[in-house]
Length: 51
Image (cartoon, rainbow, N blue to C red; front, side, top):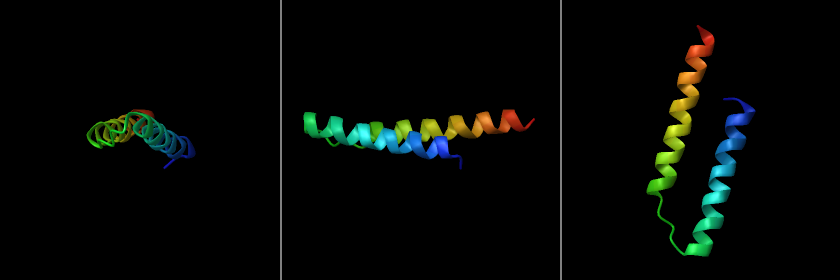
């Protein structure tokens, strides 16, 4: 994993926590979908870059 992907994931988690504190809605569905999308996008980009 690259440093940028780890920083992106940390930023997503931090943003989710801050927004959840203000809205009092700690729904993890959107967080899970976003994280899966980031990981899948990274995998596709890495595969295309390799070719």
